[in-house]
Length: 494
Ligand code: HEM
Image (cartoon, rainbow, N blue to C red):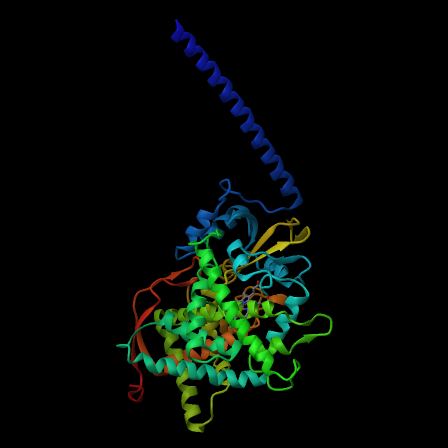
């Protein structure tokens, strides 16, 4: 009797609970639908916020480990259109895969969209990082660095410096049983070049210190934002402290050796540029600010430029017709230079048309900086989409670069496609260096470095590349660092 009574009670309670759950669930769905309809009416992009807390992060990361990292974007684009809503890396975000929308996001003058990077990046770069700051200081540093990198004095000197680094490195390769890891070799060269551009430091103990500490620092750029002894972020922050101390010492020493801040002498490096700039209102830039920005500008030496160079070699290895054309063009320049006994200059390299097309095609396919992160300061309407105030926005470059409406057979490495448009034209559908007021000031320097490397590489060596694949997460790189066996092209290079 007692059992029967308990069973009935159990059934009643279960029924009540199921009914409550059903009513709540229905109410939540009704509210969600209402909200979606309301948002749709306003023009807020549609999408899914995935699981509680993690959102759609796992799928986003998983796509980065495949050969088609834009599959995450493609899937949502097919359901919701080119601009959609998702929830990744801890925040709700609107993703744009539309070139026109991206253009508006990039072009605005800091009064609508401000940078908003994931937490590990913000922690490591700090508040005074040029990538994160907005307004007067960003413009001031951008124009100082851009002006220096475009100056004729810099262009003449840097061409020689890069050539020396490239030739010095290549001359050691033949001692390494002719098997090298190209990704490591390009990193050594581009890091050495950039540390020289930034602080006039050449090969030696200081360079070794910067390379070791910087490698430790950069490992934490994309990681879990947890900060206590032993965690990745903590180790990287410690490395940054050591870097800041060293850079501050170098700046202070330089400051003392200058007669006065506005010293008329030649500006040799980024430290000189920042020290000589004295603003009428704010005076000289603070020491912490200068050192933080110098460290941040080492990133292209360790990451972006060597990756682009390595990937160009990878794509050329897989595309014999493009390699043959590259060799022809570069051999031609080498012969002309040998006959005239003239030194190479910046323009010699940048006038190599096919080589520039190879670089553009590499930047399009590799998508080293695959997107920029912003936050809207007010409600903004772009085309038919409303981006509400306070929302994070990801302008995806890789989706635009790999869209077959923009590029025929986008997964095919085809440098010839640039013959129609011209490779250096910064068109709406080609934004490897970003755009607007934050357009990368290192654009020309990067192209020069890659061109010089490729010129000497293809004219000096034949090579056989082992099987390797491109990985896209957390950063773009070759899985096995691209092992290659080199064979000198001419007997004198033995
Ligand atoms: C292949 C190589 C490179 C690529 C793909 C690249 C890409 C980019 C992109 C996409 C941005 C815009 C970021 C944003 O809008 O938030 C940027 C900014 C920047 N880049 Fe590069 N970059 C490269 C090399 C370099 C080099 C060699 C330097 C030299 C110092 C450099 C210095 C900077 C600086 C200082 C900024 C910040 C500009 C600002 O916010 O005002 N980059 N880069």
